[in-house]
Image 1: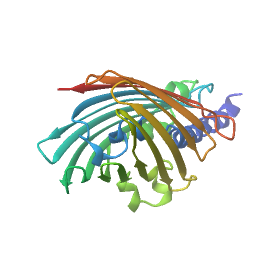
Image 2: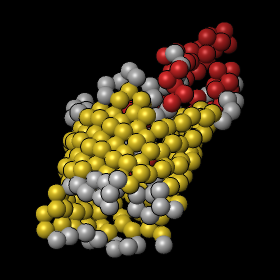
Image 3: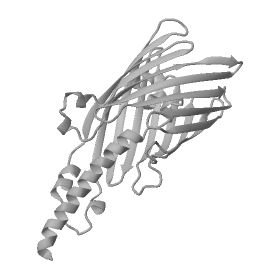
Length: 293
């Protein structure tokens, strides 16, 4: 029996490590906060920091609902204007997916050029730092220490960066961001998972009546190996009262969201993303925005 354990335990540990990598890929691919499209662009693009003055956005997103160890993301983002053209932002994100835990923070700076009262071009840069670790208790039930897991957990804080650009007119909005810039120079085998490359997005705002608007949007998210993700949506908003929107994603998901706006104080949002064409990846998301003077 002891002889067999020498082979069984390493196989179990290797399988656990492979599973954690697969879950990490799923986490980064499917944990796609819906708040980013309409309610807080700074969540995905550093160039959009300070677009609404000073604010804080707290978010809880849980995907793959119904699966044990499903990805869960908790994030807190704050951004503010600094003078006429500059803005700064900060984000803290905690991801838990199966046996993988990832904590990340970022600092952002954005600079805007005003072409007119309604037309503005902004550029932003984020410097991020993150720490990943595997849950030893979940990987190993026998009390043995796996060297691969130990080596993974002993990795220090790692650094990365994102770059974004955004154009905002009276009705038209165009934006793009490149993420995980350090991975551009890395070979495929040196990337810890299939991280996203970046995203482009376009939206157009139609003013229906006084205080009412309708805004269709399309976004395209790119990955190194996974299929790219197309998201299309439309949002109806009654100024400072409520908003409601629907989304469709190329993975076959249909999603919806509603929110209550508390005038100049902030808003409370709820989103639900249905199962994809393979029958999984339901998401629930709650977001709270607080506007500060």
